[in-house]
Length: 231
Image (cartoon, rainbow, N blue to C red; front, side, top):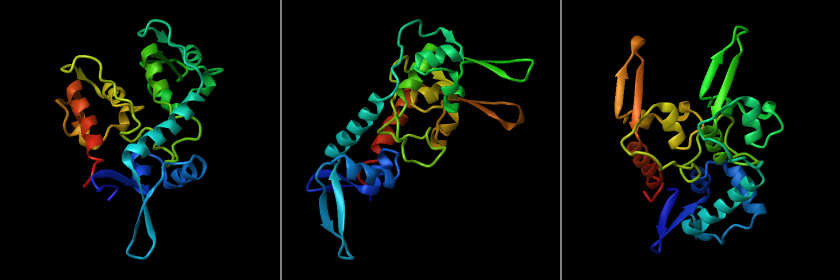
């Protein structure tokens, strides 16, 4: 049990805190050793050793403070200009505060709003400013998440930023649904979400085209957070 009630107050254990913030237990242990966490609540285990718990309303602000300090060390973002203007890789890199396009992460390349296939076989990518800004808001900072490689798009619900703007009834394709839920790319959408799409169109070859209303995405995000509560 990751989260439990102790004397009427929610507490979370070490494994639960790591899962909630999408980091490895080893990364959490380094934070505990170097960043003075809240005072733990201890209880005796059956084997005679002690179990450590933290009050959830103290642990979350402590973890958020750590994340905020990491984000503060990120490159400054240029938030001026037309949100719908399409930018090439050099311009997108400047918006993100990078020295050049070579610094763009593969996850960012996958978010391109416009991709042109060139005769050479290469691709010319362009991004709307709003896409660049959304990516910047979801950067985690130096030091990484401590999660396994390839899991950077699967941030836990306590860390992802949910976009709650727009018409609740608007139907969104996977690329936009991923942005609303704070995922870097559509491939990261959970299987449970695929099953509750508001509009499913059968395509050739057995493929399906799915779309979700914004209110469905918001409700899903809320259910993720609530599912982390006491069992």
